Length: 345
Image 1 (cartoon, rainbow, N blue to C red):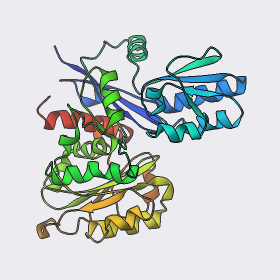
Image 2 (cartoon, one colour; image 1 turned 90 degrees about the vertical axis):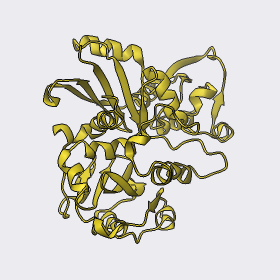
Image 3 (tube, rainbow, N blue to C red; image 1 turned 135 degrees about the horizontal axis):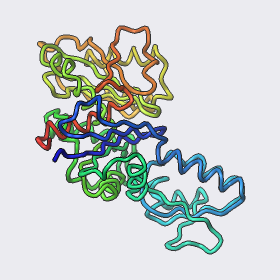
């Protein structure tokens, strides 16, 4: 029987979903674009604020995109309690969270409404898939963005360790960042893996580059010349220099800091190996890391742009691919590509 794989790319605005069935044409697999869990939690908190109810955050570490709603709740004069495990969704430094008004509690206070945090809720997904007439999947694989827990170190700098590891330890092979065993510092990915039942997980950035490689023409072109892959997400912009199927450079910044001119200028410097870590980090981005670029790769000028805010580079000499026929699901297709490259499909 053909395996059914639920592939989820969970972002700050949406969670993009592919219900992949082995042996079935990709066009006949089922796809969904749904609000992200953090966005749903944010709306729930806003509703409780309007009702004047105190809140208790329970559950697991997850995406912190609901933070603005949480702090607005406190500023409105209402109490916000959190279990220490759930509080990590708002930040790794619990002492700092307490100073910002978050009250830690191991149990539900009597005057609070519980709000359950989790990037993946198996019960919800069982009901959703059943309502859609789909069988429970044989495997769930998922990606989220995880800055990692780096005590005493900038989260931006700590997150960039993920990319330098890709370049130095994994020889640029992006499928190696589809983790079956999650490194200890990636606390959100660890919680996600537990929630999905132990399947492989990875960062959304790794899913993005794998999504581009789902397009056979892009993979094949990387064996002829160096190419640049750019994923412009709602929160983060991440770019990769790819040659012969391997990553030779990584750039990551915040999309909110981008203008078309700035992103293109950074991209051209990045492709030429002329952009350094400090240039990006001092500009409040995450950083940049580039290996010695081989001459036979050329100038990495072919550029492919994906992501929900890809229109930033409209009018520039770039291509806008749609892996699997649907750009919004590039990360989902990337997870499937990662499984294939790892020999799991």
